[in-house]
Image (tube, rainbow, N blue to C red; front, top):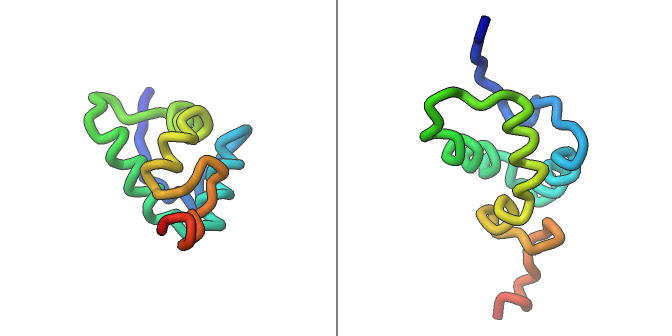
Length: 84
């Protein structure tokens, strides 16, 4: 049996290293951007991703997520003076 469900990144039960990534994104107030990023990443898959695939992407592709959301390598928004 297979079923799909829609979820919000705010209510997803993240585990292991993905929890750390999500906490960094939450502190930066970019949860909506993370939701959009994940929807884009998995949009072309023929099958919907499993919970494990979503969690593992957020865990192991942390650097890609930070880059896509404009965070530095530590998961923080860059200082404005660093951008100048």
